[in-house]
Image (cartoon, rainbow, N blue to C red; front, side, top):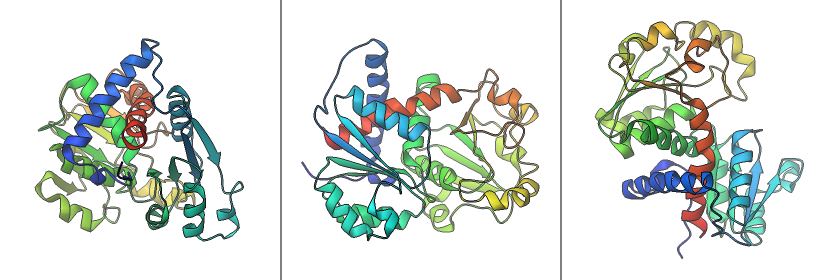
Length: 300
């Protein structure tokens, strides 16, 4: 079997991505029905965390256990990476002992280096550039609630960060229209916007971006590592909260998503995230099922 990495959504073909999303839905039904399915018996996933996590760790560790395999958690304190060992050396050593590696880190370039020198599949559990596993969960969630996302309109409001970049890639792969509303100076990567072409539009007007939208999405204003910018960002993003008033500009059956953790009263009001249009809890649970489909695809 040819080694495949999953560093961004663009590492999959459109057909592979659609098949993966369908498989995630199928695996979810199997798990909810109590069906035992262990395609990764005796397989081991190494999980390297430079950034702390709730959903990423629990979903990958649980997924491997449900599949009959095992996950090894490695923080910076647990590896020689934290003491300056070259990424290339770590990649060669760890990949000689396990069947796949999941990495949650800051630098996307570091992830790419690790993948280059790994002899087993490498999965991006999050970098500062993209968060593709979250998009698997989000897209699965939309399909479950509303059917195909092809031809729909999605609005992302907030920082042009890794989540925004991942939504741009998803729009390219799944043929939906993406409106991005962000303050001036916080736009997503210019090269990604260029590659996306007509399927993505950028504005600094969240109301205009939300008109006739089928899905509204946001993320925290200050991501991990940006805490010192919190006060500056609060001022810059003050008019970019998704609240009940803004939701009224979207379609009446529009959904709301957030990758979590959320700050109620900042990027989203409590009335929206805890309201009837919010599917954040289904979205969060789908990290488990979508990633199980990914693990099966890469490792089974």
